[in-house]
Length: 132
Length: 351
Picture 1 (cartoon, rainbow over the protein chains, first blue to last red):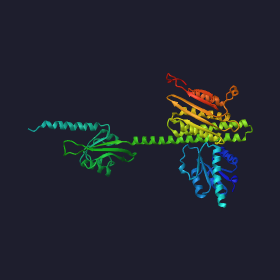
Picture 2: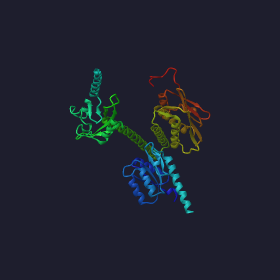
Picture 3: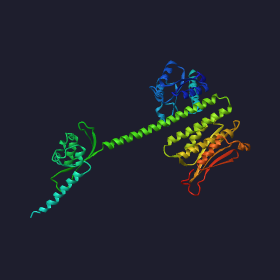
Picture 4: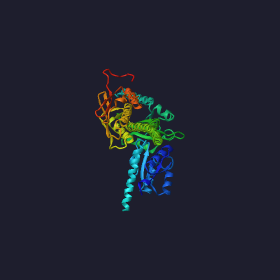
């Protein structure tokens, strides 16, 4: 799988932030899929198998917040990379699954894209190593 | 001859003690060795709705409608009377029919005096129901305040994120390179205000440690403005100064403007370079400077109308009672914001 066709799922309940995040993901060369809450995110993940990275907000309506969603994904789909963003100033990062990257809002688009690229490049390299 | 008059001071002392107990504003009971009431304060009868007439010589456990007949309490009082136990701040919930329970704190003490035959136990009862309720209310209010503060910070962060998103969105859509530059600058200013906000929210106390603050601010600025950190870098050199939160906000905004300005003008055509943000203080005097090793000031540019950034820096410096000094750094430019405390104390001056 090449880096450019990697699919990133963005979970964000504020439509304006979601539009920008999808724009950012696509400008970076990934495919973006956007949903407004954790339940929709899980439905997408059950329906398709090509999601490589989930970028989620923490505070969202619905049964799960972003932290619970991150744990759920890590348990059910361990290979998926996780990035969590929140407006809370001091988020206890240790409550997130290992390997999750945390960004406080407002996040900087460039820094975030760099991190996504780095995470997905690791996936890419690992997969290539497996193919050999 | 029997010293009959010696009885009189004793009787006098007893009647004085009974009068003291009766008048005590805090509920008090004097019990004998069998836990029969010798005397009760009027406040006890009033606070716990017990008929005053029937009290003396009654068993403690038979007071009222049996609400005081609690085995644990009676046993503690018996222990106190025999000298085996002590009732110290014993908490007890008094339950009476048709009334809300009262939370009482009991202290009982065996009186030590000449007459060893007659045991006397003094029981003091404090009703702490309201005090505890108000403590709980205070705790709840404090907790609520902390939650509200977090909520406000969260909303501020989300609002800043929405604005940042719109600015980035517009910067991508707009056709003119100049407009794109302005939108990107606005985005950088917003990100630096957010960094300042986060730092202040985390520091909580009134004083801000400037080095950590400036480092975080410059990290945020370089993340949003510098595409290649190998080519351009921002460094912070600061002493251990601490300053008030509102002053640190002004300093942060000044640094933001000067760094934006240096990045925009000092390094044309992908020129490599370095920006150094420096802060130092001595007593009440301090200097903040932003130095670059770029192309230096162009003489022609001084005739230009000052930009938004220059106006912001001048206004903020004025608020801080400081002077803006621009000079060549050879190579590059250094802009210093210098605050010199006047010899006469500035207390009460309207800045």
